[in-house]
Image 1 (cartoon, rainbow, N blue to C red):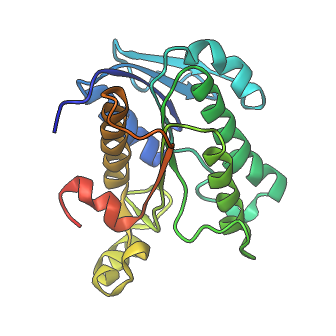
Image 2: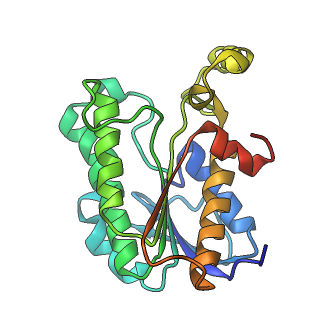
Length: 233
């Protein structure tokens, strides 16, 4: 497979569990020439020559990110509520899970990004009676509407190595994985991050080489599809 060309990446969610892994993978990737981290507050957690942090007011995300998104190639969002979902008012949940990621994606697309990668969740359905699954289903609809040439939607179930997943639960999930339907199996945060990066780099290379069709592509990756990038199905 040809080597993908160098790219500039935007990342929303670098202070989270999966996002932090993704930030480090992007720093380590020789193909990523520039990495813009979009944050709510200055962190300084990823000091590297290719990294810049853009601190935004989340309610003005698209406006404030716009000048920094120019020349972007790939936009990755591993951003969400995490622990405490059930305790949030629905209006706040919708802001965090739908409005902010969608605004990030729109700003990135307007700046030139052709590839989007967004972490959602297994079982999403905008028609679901379960609040969280309904909201995340609407999140997928919102980012699909942005119009990336390639959009990857990453749907984990229980995330292992996650600060919000108790060690005992993570151990049990590993034990029961062989008996669990594939898409509901627990997956480590590193595997999600690797899949988001590798799929995005592959898709960008295909687009730049002119090998993609004219129709935008949306690819949904659940447990098995994500594990492919760790060398296991």
